[in-house]
Length: 221
Image (cartoon, rainbow, N blue to C red; front, side):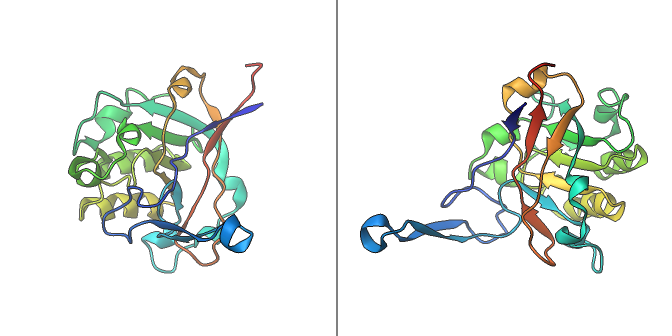
């Protein structure tokens, strides 16, 4: 068994959603000054690789700690849209159907746009990413996907009203969301589905949490 890391690193001033607080990571103690190294992190809980719970968009719906841990482990299929979707491209049924006709109920859909490799504080990356359209979100709901992941800080473009609508459709159907992924080249040659683990940090009553998403594969396959 080995693990393939799909996470984005978190570091001081790393790129994040521009309407969220900037990321800060500062040493508050060093071996020389205090005998220990210790860092203070300041960041939103929807920073880096993270999960959205229904509470993120829907008042009164489950928080991240109210979802069973088992739901964050399961069969995942990867949709490779690298080189196909460009800036501000909506991902709808016309792109999903030809590549996910084999999708089984309760599978996790991971969408690779290539934007995970372009992570930077540029106007294009921050405000013009590809996104799942409302129609694409409804298509995933109809196919009974368990969850949806994507290699950008938001599956819904980051700009309202589109962003809110996509989140509303997915989270309203009980489909949790995994954002800010990075896909190593090797995952695109793997047989599908593969087992995804994306366990959230236990943040009580929170709308989402950081996670370390990995593909767990057996070397004998």
